[in-house]
Image 1 (tube, rainbow, N blue to C red):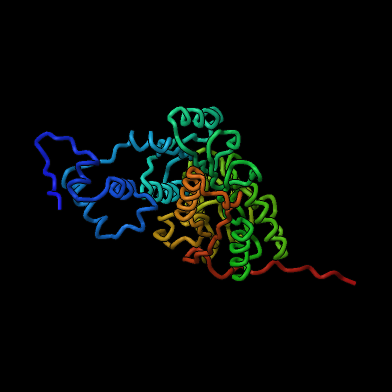
Image 2 (cartoon, rainbow, N blue to C red):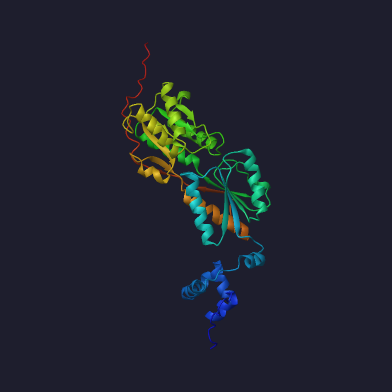
Length: 358
């Protein structure tokens, strides 16, 4: 048996050195260090030996050699509207976990809904030789890009084009929320719509109207508000709720576009001297991490955001590798109703029906 190689002072550690030291083939070490799918068949004991030796000798695979061999940069771009607590951070956590697991690096850019940045960022990312792009809630002619693209959120689905869409079933989400409120006896409901630039706003509002009709509910114009502003701030929901009260809107339940706006609306409700949920029930959307830690805990429609991020990253890498021919153009994920403390039985008397005299 050949003797194990010992490292000489100041010797640069190469793949061949590590292979000789461990008495394994360079191909085996390369597969394990690059976390290739093919390495799944290699015994765990062998993998552990390779990682231990790599740590001992501070060995890192050559990124340049890997890129030259595969003609890939092992880097992807991620476009988001903004980076703040809530929707995008949960999506990014799923995206990051999967990319790191697969040995990919990524660039994140935030366009803040500015048309010039939405148009320019894909070009700038392409100049950095990304292998593909994940675009979150981003309206753009991404199908024209010469690389694999996965879009998360939105209703501008272009079937048959080179874009895969990861979308929530908004129809199901609207029915979950209104079914819950109706079961508690709520008939007068207010709705906070999303900003005009959000690709979810229109499709979700249409779904809410459909669910309301099925329950025989009419949402009057004075009970419809819309978020204004390009930030994810509770203040936006707070301002909408204040406008509801200023114009005398009558409602016993409020369905907000997202959890952040719901939290702001609850503050305005409390300042009005009303209680949640005794006087007004509130439902949010997303199930951000802080939703469960409000007082009371926020009832919400959960988007499986981290899972959506994982699915987006996995889908993109499959398309980059050329193994995604069976991937459908649209992948729908299911929402879930999470009941906490901000919804309760309607205590307001039902509107009386006037009797007509004969």
